[in-house]
Length: 249
Image 1 (cartoon, helix red, strand yellow):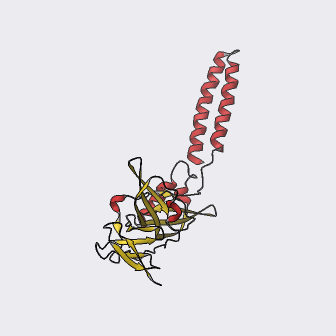
Image 2 (cartoon, one colour; image 1 turned 180 degrees about the horizontal axis):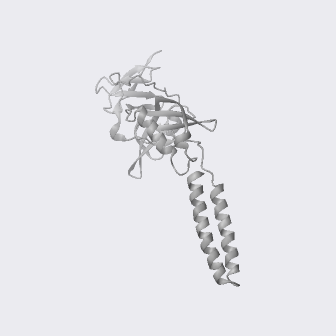
Image 3 (cartoon, one colour; image 1 turned 60 degrees about the horizontal axis):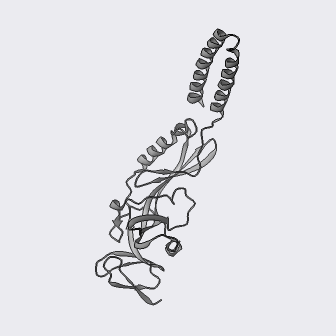
């Protein structure tokens, strides 16, 4: 297939490799290098900090949020969990004298949130043959780095391929299947779709209360005392109805 060479991003030494290779180790500084048609970059991995039981707990807390369907944290039936290392490109750019870090997917995916991952620089580990992934599958990159380079602002400072830890959880609610992605490093949750809490009951209570208060305001021109008593009753009823909706719906 022939050989080619590239400058090591760390020490600058010329490193020869087979033309079809994606990864090579610098023989001078021992850095692992990712080879892309657009150039060379470092090759990193982020360790899994979130265990499976932690991932389920994070999902439960997320599902109990105010925008989720009532009791989603209790009614959602987990249908499976999977952990993987997903490939992303990390670009460090100099823009107006400041360093900008941009992360873009290196693999094709329909999973939610993978365009929003944030790489914590202090946790990056050089990924080489000595690194133990613990049997976790690595999704191989199928998007070239060059697909992003022309669109990036500023001047290049560093580019790297990073294998990012993610948990994918599937769950079922009311007969429909949903999926969430949990950042295996920070615990952040991403979901493109999820059962939402309906606003209809709240709008109904607000509407009834509005028209009741409007009618009582008109009544106050003819019988202030009667209007005042009705307003007090309406306040109690609207408050009670709001509590009922918040508790049961």
